[in-house]
Length: 308
Image (cartoon, rainbow, N blue to C red; front, side, top):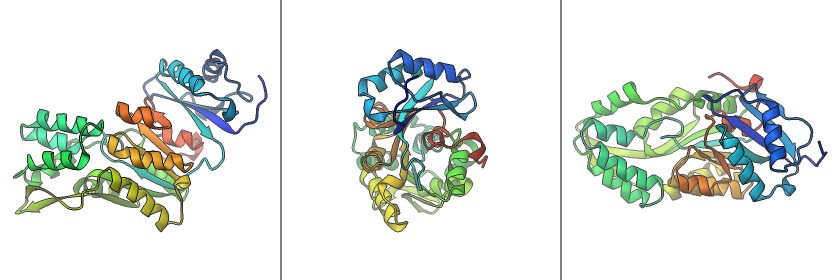
């Protein structure tokens, strides 16, 4: 194969439920769309993730789109990543539908018989069709009178971690990175999830509670789209970092400002199994891989990934 300057790598990560991914397949995909790679594909995770060195300047948007389409047909993600500064020192992660598999308000609403109404508002807000802060207030007021015991039961019985979440947090922490859970959800849940996974810090909204019941209000200020970006900037300032040092991940429109800011500064802003408006705008996308795909993008190999 033609030798080219290796300024970038193409990273291929498959769905954990897909067929084994072999070097020959990713090399063939590159040939099909006329992408020149430097040498052979290198293993990141055996039969799951590979990287191919390439000249990023020679990669057009059309070529990357074609490669993503070809890989996507095999339940595999493809991203073009600069080799310089690839490993990051700060992880800023959304929680709901990113680190955990649920939307907690939707689950809680379903328990009290208003699931469809709340779920519709959530979906529209996450796709950028509604103002996040207004949509949050509208949903919370519908839950007035719900008991704290119902929140306890929801967390204990139905909140599950997204596959790859323990490995993502543990591996980055083991490499000295700061890990932060920044959610438009609620501290009631982020505190528990952060402790469970070992996040260094967490930020979210606070539900107003009186006599062990929800009042239907959120304690201001509301942590929404702009506040997530503010959290990224504050965490960078606190730890002497810039957006170039950060990897930010989320799935909803309220994550876009922090995702785009990280990418604009040379960091990684990643749309994870994201809503269409987010996937269309983010530079990096994981539509098929689990959260270990974030480690693939940073060049971690099997032996470097911590189990928990």
